[in-house]
Image (cartoon, rainbow, N blue to C red; front, side, top):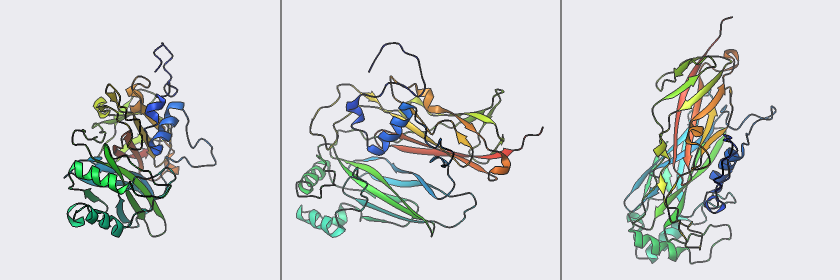
Length: 353
């Protein structure tokens, strides 16, 4: 990292070291680069910004916790939103696959339940006592865990991926973790959307698991006159229409955890960083109306100030052009797969002449 003094440009800091960027999943890397390079999506007026929510959207999947030791159980939740005028019930379908998602976008599991059960029996294990079935059910939330000791899971991982596999599969080394994939399909009867989430089953008892980042309790909006309004979490907050508001989201600095980077399980270098580093964080700002100045904000230690993650500007729409309640959503992610979100509802007030 360069250390020479430089102008503090909010969205044009130096890029992270390539060696660390190479460990970021593709879906995390792209938004991070957009933040760091100052690229904003949705600037062409003929296209709706991807952060504008006007129909069925799946904005995030979270696993709590995002890393699992033996005996742990993750609660799987999703941030699914609809148009404010759409009251159709939603259907959910959760499933998991003992293979990490690949960069080519394949979401169908290349291993069947029967093949996986046979593999477990070959290793002398009872499938009913080790892992949940691939099909995790049709509820809005799901749970996933396993009971294999770390050494057994590592041996099973090595056995499974020593076999021939399709070229598109990402083959883990199993030294630190077995990355698995959770897939969620959501439908409103007409449209179905799908999203995937990687979870790490840790194969080393000494590894501390990641934790999801977290929000504080207060979100505020400040207008050009310096008037600050706290956005209520339990009811819509009245804000003046067609005005630019500076939004501040409370995120504690310890939301970026310190950790020692390990080589990716597909990396054969075997090298680890000598010192802990702070997690990269980025946040996507979704809106049900109006426009955010930046689609995403981010924090990269030594390059982007933490306060830049917390701030953005929202230009509220005219009340006549917006629904009665305009939702704002924030999805916060770390580089290791942690996810959190929060939201607030805005009731626009017409300004009198």
